[in-house]
Image 1 (cartoon, rainbow, N blue to C red):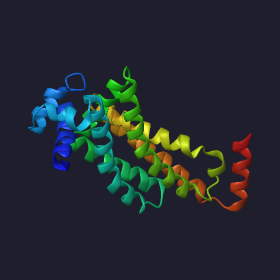
Image 2: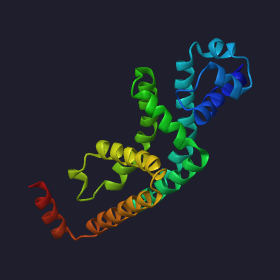
Image 3: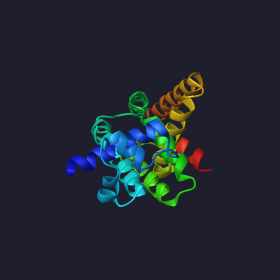
Length: 205
């Protein structure tokens, strides 16, 4: 039974990749999973419930190894480098298409919106923890809304994944610009105590 549920979850992801969210149905999911269509309703009740489970399951599978790699990050530049690596991996796996379709479907569907939001928070939480650790002791720490920054970072990478499909050079330029900002943050961290106090005073005005 567990194997059938997983086949349906995998089938839902494949159906979204192949047919888009609008073309994903019990029939297309069952065909991708190579099971009887009735099993969609037997195991999940509705197609929406299956899509919710598939979205969360696929995200959890990707976040787990990413969380472990985040634990090895020691600077903002390393965090961005890891983000670029993840970006390339997600694109190669076709997860960009799935994410784009889920977000598109969520615009007019509250249940899909809740599933997409829950999946996004699985990414946001470890990024927020890492940013809080990296910014500890930095002059920027008191001036940074870390939860908001974590959401901005995740939203930025999601946008870049979609943007790359229409303007690859522009997406690379945006990532390079983020790298330069990370270097600037490192320069700030290397300032002496007097310069740090002056910077804090200036930024708080």
